[in-house]
Length: 414
Image (cartoon, rainbow, N blue to C red; front, side):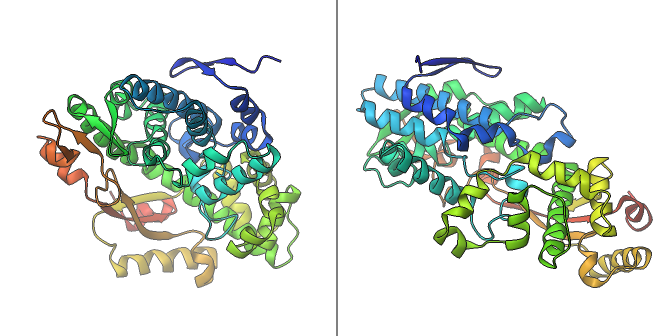
């Protein structure tokens, strides 16, 4: 069987699957599941074209990794075939641990466990099946491989993951502010002292990359209506889990009902392989098929939340720099509780408040290093003449209030 395939991608054109191992990974049920998980969660509620999947993204990131390895080799960097294959496998599987609707429900199914940890556990399962074929990929993914720059290509503030998701998400949403010069950035990559660096000629492309991240978060990922949809599906699943743990009968696939009723946490994740096997069978379809049925459930809160999600009757979300006034929050709470006959605990299904953050670039975490023409190395913010880049390296915090639209008109007139 010919396992070296060509795939037609709408963003980059033709992609190649250059090795039989990568083809086998593409065919694995853990990876095929990513076809059924949306890349940007509930964003399609605002941008109808944002229906692309984690599967698309993983293929795109693998393609960019191929380009990066080719460029680094052309500049004299020694990357063996085994290392190249390991890096390609690592980036291909880097998001395999995402659950339904991606980040929107990050901790709902396995409490306190990030998707990166689930990805690693799934990679370890596949590695056992493939008799150690992923040893190098796992070492690169966990940053335990001697060549640290290979890990940076998979996970850093300038990795193939970020280059693809900004490019792909801007393409499918139609938001041009997210377009980045991924090809020029990759052509400017090099390695010094086992660190990934970018040649000084690419500094303006780096500036555009950082600005694009800030704009895409406000305009797409943290758009007010996207937040409203994500808050709603979070509350739907929280209510369903509360009912399931009380023994209330719910429709759902066996695996979905397991996570709702058992609510496994870190201990179960680390000690029971069955948790991962069940998780690997969950996707967006499990949730939305259940939500459609729950819209007719006898529990009025669950039914109302689900019906509103199905028909896009969402809360209105307000964002501002300062925390919301306590008296205003109290007025909203009293009005909603009175009209719906809610307890204090039940109110949180209808009204949510808190804060969100936007981190375009965090130099204290992992710097993007520019290799200057004189051979020195500088952080991109120190080299740039763009005064805004310093501001973009700081975390921005905004406070949100999510309320049913009828109450926002009465209490929060625009």
